[in-house]
Image 1 (cartoon, helix red, strand yellow):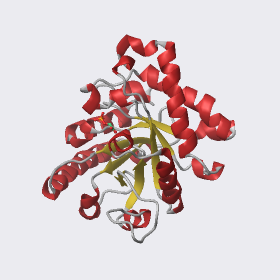
Image 2 (cartoon, helix red, strand yellow; image 1 turned 180 degrees about the vertical axis):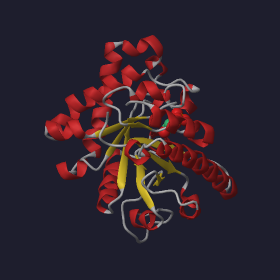
Image 3 (spheres, rainbow, N blue to C red; image 1 turned 45 degrees about the vertical axis):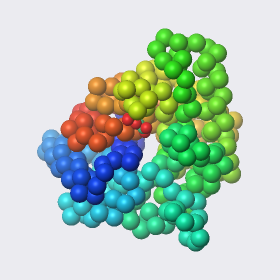
Length: 289
Ligand code: PGA
């Protein structure tokens, strides 16, 4: 049994296409979750000890969704808001950017940083990601630092076990971690949630085929042992929280959470379907992870 609530972080990406649809989706998700939480309480459970749901909508919806959350009186301990990106300055002449303080003011608690889609499509560098991590920590928000750099279809299926491929992959992710964490001290690194997402397992790439949970577990174990333990004391590294992302849904969430190095999941497309999101929440609340 874990000491921390399991994180279920929904990344809506650039969806849905209107505020009206976003509000309806969010309300449907809250209602489904609230039902689960009250059922858990009726049988003497304390859902906030087992699960924390975080929804990361596009920026323009944050204000309204925060209002909906207050209106429906769902506790922030059970359902928090996250942003999908952030800029590293507090304010000023940075056209188009959004600062950590602005997010905080809107009720945001978590920020995704370094998603592979931003690294790949928007050419975000490790240096930029490092600045965003520093600024987010300084503002008192929780960064979800995403790493993963495997795009080649050669990593699929049985080829995944090929030692040479896996070593190259590990080396690239090591660089993302080392450069991303530059200047982040031991006290701060413990506030970061690490997200491991093999790019080929993300549904827009894979058509919904996730990584094997054992593979995710072994990569996270190696990142801790071979990369993070060179940067921080081992007792700190052992406590760092890792989540997995890439085609997570109700059919496979159980296998990821059964792995001891994983403290949560980051579903994208499944988080846009209220029955899937609440189904995953139900599995977490009922499971003995
Ligand atoms: P997916 O997205 O669950 O649709 O694969 C995950 C992500 O990219 O964060």
